Length: 132
Image (cartoon, rainbow, N blue to C red; front, side, top):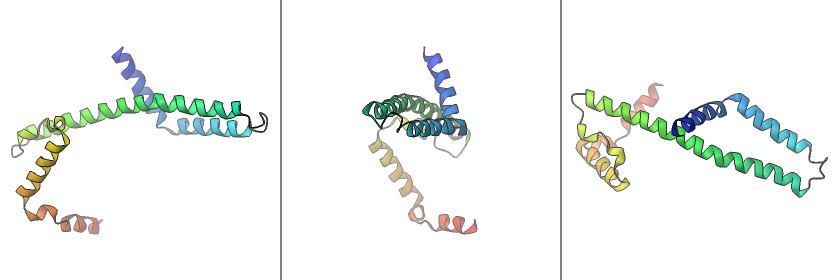
């Protein structure tokens, strides 16, 4: 079941982010709007679009979350491998995504403290932007 869901989620999110999906959604809205006078802008006419968009949005939340979880896991695995392969990197950083927000903030403060005052000085970033 999990493999089937991931396959469907991958295909649906891949398709949903493309221009044909936007054109289809826009077409549905235009057709709905044009049929308003035909149905005298009735409550049922409004309920159709409200229900349809709500159901699609509800389902897409799960599909998009699945795609984001996969992407985040893949990025974490790649970063962990870079840390592992780099001789000067601190292996203690591998897996820190599992820590609490407070623990991560503590690590961030520790890194900034280790880097000295230059870590809070944004001149390097400004110089980089200036070169673009």
